[in-house]
Image (cartoon, rainbow, N blue to C red):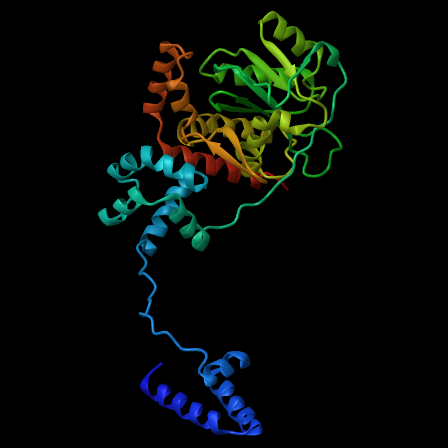
Length: 378
């Protein structure tokens, strides 16, 4: 309050102390209308039972990150497909210096230094102001009935293989909301230990097509395939895949019917690696299936070499709350290099592949294929 306010309040207090009950009510009305106080608070002030404490003026801290930083962050975030702030921070630690030194990221030195030190929380704040929302999607499968008794059930808590090569597989349907007739599907394959992800498009759920897609994904894996886990769909629970696993000495397990969390690793990738890019449209022509496979060939490099992932290490219960503890974000490529079970020959091949890759060209090619795919739907 300034001096004129102090004089006005002192004058009202004197009048209020000497006034009758009716006059006090009028003074109180005047004070409430002038100061916009709550009536009970105004009574306390005029009675002298409330004393205003003078505190130093607190002004909001000036913004550290500028609009240039926000635009640069949006550009880099787009190159990394809009991954969450913690994963983006891990990606920037590895890929930001080469992007800046090559001139692909054309920003001032000050902006570059800001991006080097920006925290995940600050990334979230800038994104909340400038970033677009992401759409949601859905997924469908049908249960199968063949060979169930011969294939062991594995729950979400049973993964104890401490080496790469044990994968979860699932199908994502591209029916566009109409399940009649043949339509394309994406076979998603994810390695449980390293989160290495492979996708392959198939024209329908026929056993031979699903098997061919699995063979295609297996050829891209940078380490030997050791085990397969699927849901109970007939496209997986069949004689061909069962005999194949026996001949190749692969572990073959399945989840419990109706328990999607038994396949939690691949169910997550059904969104992040498939639906988020290709959406819910119907893809049922040979040309569209070809486009999907061209896209997944690019995603083989993009997701596994450049996009970090976090893995849940444990859950800690504190009363009624459960705290999830994750490991340090790393790309599947980095996890494979750090794993002692991956051979030196396979690691050398991975390093040579990484040196030949260009993040920006890869992302531009992915965007071009996604646009072609969406435009192909009439």
